[in-house]
Length: 427
Image (cartoon, rainbow, N blue to C red):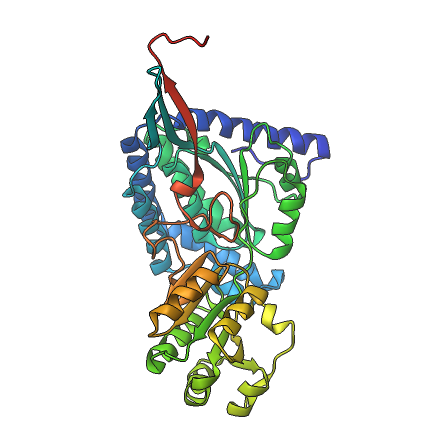
């Protein structure tokens, strides 16, 4: 792809429009592509990523070396960094998407009218996706794979922190796509770092069908404010673990520690722990010690600090914060309904789990908590496309329309009505 460095506004807009027009043509070519051809292209892309692992890692080292200059936190550097295992996981994720059923062409509903017209509601691709995201090289491949598998063209606008890594991954994928006989322009990495390019694409509702921002709150709010097309939002992950009065406390400790500590800098890591007052004295000292062993700072309410002297006081802002690091807020609640109220007041509608042996409590929590993914007796870390059987994901939507939770191939489709007659005319 041609590059552009410091364009004036008119040149930048024209450049972006040419990119979007190529994506639109590619999307039309993908619309009726057989599932086998898309799957073959994705398998080829996975193989190419594996073959190019050395070059991808070399590009990633450039990004990691530059990370301090961008002021990245340790959690952000961890998300940015690749090693051989992570590159293999990227390739495996692409291959996993290739193995999924093709959602395109699925008959959602079918009926025959009294006049003989056959009415079918068919699943079809969205078209062109503009995906804006921050420094996660694996997200580049995941998003491209999910888009291609669902028959969409994608415009990737990654963060500058991962620019070299993303460019090298896209180069491998485009080569495999082209060699498979598909339009390489169905996957394009925006080739200018100018922030105005984002605004330009967000005005192109004649060419771009949906915008998907995945990153910090400021990025998402900007996209929502400027986009002239629908936006699928991946907002923050202020995720909760609630330990009910009927919880198995050993299980609750394991789930809490895993939810918080298995990988702290990700959106499905737990940021808040709620504990029923009836089990707080038996549970909190032990789980606090387990969290402290992982270097996690605890801030809590008065009841928590009475049981965990090392805990600091939680501010009102702490209950609303996605820490993305070694800190967790803890509150003791008087009832299941108090826990539900706390989650609904402070949560981000991302992921929340209850630990309980009481099915009625679990059912009430799941029904009343306003969240994209509610879990029962399981870690919040399972809110993930691969873990839930979607293959890779393009994001975890905290919206309610048109998709919610992990967004895989099916979530990048819409539908159209196809009506077949035998010469009927309307009187």
